[in-house]
Image 1 (tube, rainbow, N blue to C red):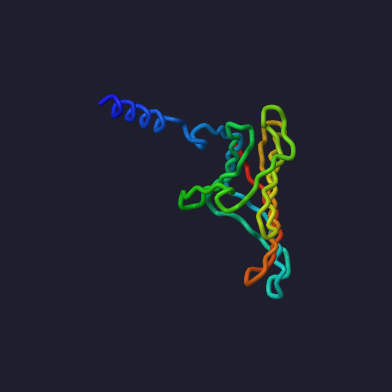
Image 2: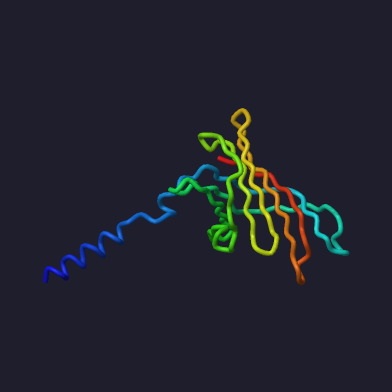
Length: 149
């Protein structure tokens, strides 16, 4: 009976441990992004408007001091860039995380850059995506800006 009681306590204790997501601290929560995209494709070989009509880009600082980028789409589905093989790297940041630059690299050559600026109380995220792709999806370069909380 004591073994069962101890096993139960161990299970309860493990179940109560906070997850990485629960312990993360949000340092940027950004809304709809607007920008331009350039596709290296014969039919789209020009700059064109590109945006997310809904959704959010969120940057979390994890308990170990690293950061990651979370994307919440229009359907409220949330995904971490690491779920798709992204490797976030903090290139620079202020002590309080009010400004930072994060690069996310993916196998295959896609690179995303997230630059948060805070100028006079106006917080904005500048985002770039460079996608190198083999196959049916054309390579793309894009730049976006979003207002952040």
